Image 1: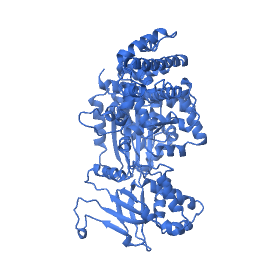
Image 2 (image 1 turned 30 degrees about the vertical axis):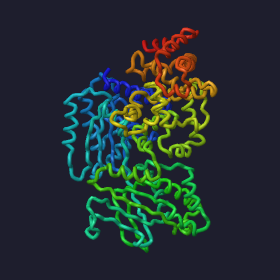
Image 3 (image 1 turned 180 degrees about the vertical axis):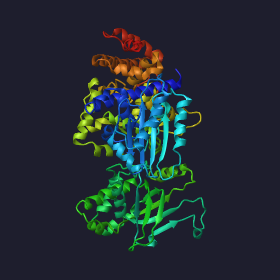
Image 4 (image 1 turned 180 degrees about the horizontal axis):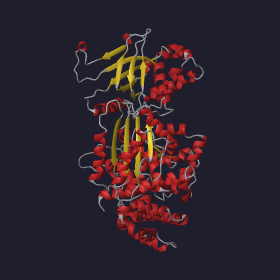
Length: 630
């Protein structure tokens, strides 16, 4: 099977897994969710557009309709998406008139105010159809590659027909095929581009330093970036973050060093700000390294009422997340009791922090800004792992597993964020989801901490399954290392970034739980079972006969009756123990050195045969071969 076909097959398995979960979660709200092509509408809006699941049901307009399946409206960015979805098998060809009907009928009826399938959409269209600032997208999703030039031409002609109409919205169309959907799912889901601006200020112009390369007076190289260094009252920093929170604007989106909750650094910042000695509080400016912000534009609006304001458009805090969060936490305690904000200003109005503002330059390489993020954070001892884990692939993985009740810890702030998010009923709902998976392995999950999955540990489990336990033990330092020598294997690119291409989210959860069960059953004295070996041996059995279909076989393994799963798990545990004993007998090498050496087939295979013949139940190998033959 070619690499492309493997990718297609595994992605189809992942989507099936997602649709099954959608059915489980939303069937009571609409019993059409047991039909995959209906659930696919929900999937597209949830996974490709990141739409709020609570809103999606009202935005599915029709079922098995040639025209509009669903729509999404983003008022703040003035975008409307009108969507048609075809959840087809690999061999089902798209008929031309289905695409043609989608491009002709809905727009005609919406323009004439006669669209009756969804009153909200019809009314919305009447409000925006003469607004030249709007973009109206007609998106068609085809879950295979079966199309032809005639269908492609429909979309090209549609775009030419609606191009550049003065005083009207931009109307454009696009067809997305299987590969496009795959790329949007894993690498490029739609991100709503929220607008946000905020004006920070300082008391006098002398407390603001400007670097303006474009102005002759400064006599600076034109290649330099426009910059501002501002001695800023921390009350402005508080208001900026408070405003961003209320508008749901991700002000730390480009920051890879996120809030770590309670830490020695944050406690030190907090202690200074809460000090009742106001003179000590003023020293905050000298103790703190400051905040770095990158923004789209900055405008010095001149002196206003004794202040020197600077308006920042789409600011992103790229360094100083700890400082911003701790300032917010301390001042918010005052602000809750102080609706006028007067007491807060009295206490903190003369406490300053240095804010460095850098303005994005259109003709400057985007890598420069990433380097700014990297190097300003490296001053705080941020390692390469944080940068390597700051990938959309891992964010998608995190969202998928959270949907199923498990919380992948990618950034340092994730644990703190999840602890804030999941309390009381929200935690109970999450535990209910998670225990649907864990119950089959007789693992009862009762605490939030048991739902946490460190990304690096999950990658080790995955590597053990794909290769064997030796690699999980010895290649851990390379799993989040993006830069390697020319002759080295790049485990980060070859395995870590591909984790979801080979296994579904449910596969990964089941493997993680099997690993955690082995950890729980592990004897401290005997050091068996060996958790990564349990996963590695299972992977070898599953991939031995048909290495390109491991996702399906893993599903079959965990779809067995509980007794069968536990019997085979016991077999794998015994095999790790026997291998350990025999390895020492044959080589004289102890456990701690053994796990740093590759698996010896000449020792493993005799132990496998010996153990398989002595069990009263069917051996793992035989059982799995039966599953593969189904």
